[in-house]
Length: 322
Image 1 (tube, helix red, strand yellow):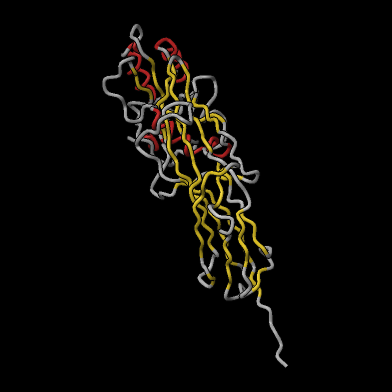
Image 2 (tube, rainbow, N blue to C red):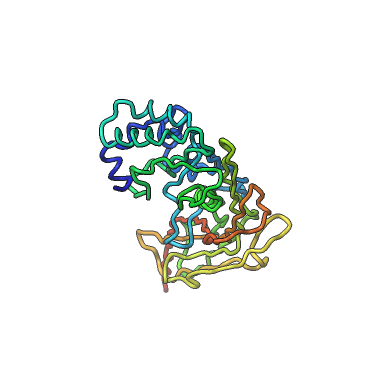
């Protein structure tokens, strides 16, 4: 029986203190709080810290260039000593009905591993949306982890999982582009100047945990590598422009003083608009520490994207021949 079904049968909903600190759920924050803020807490004890996004303008949550990539739905975190776990089970499941009562009885028969070296680890969630199945069942809502874990659970927290959570929480600056003429005053067959108007640097995000003797961290580093602008219609020349970004004295910028993109729209948008878009591709690496300059680790993370979109109105000037 999977987690979603388990919750549907009110188990382990009796265990309201899923954080172990008197609170419930995902530390009382909104779903995907880390992804929305760039800083904060995920799960119970994972802290997210990000360097300044830079660029002096707006920022947006990074999106993956790989549409199939997904951040972890859930994982196990260290939560209780054996004595704390006994107290937690008796408080949370006292008087519970089935199947929670059987779960509490099972843990009681195990004597909560009292006298053994190790910790109880408990499942935690990236957000409060339980509609996505988590590979945890009613038999392993918590798992016992000895100091030398002979067969680590695939969902046990690792630096790799931390790196994915850090990636999902990263905020990146939006592409600083300026249109001339303004977006609501473009003219058919008149070149529109697209200027790259800013320098910014790499961005890094660290996810770390330091709880009950368990210490680990991972840092993702996003480095801007390319800028692409798209006119939003096939009736433009060119329809898109792509430029490499290189490191300069003030940060990363377009690799030429004359690399501005001149877009000429060949037809009017009429009473509608065209969806002009600018995006920056970021090369993302990660290291298994809080040091952004540490050695890159595998498996690699997908490139990230930060995107700015705006509607542009293109008018056609009518001329009169005499």
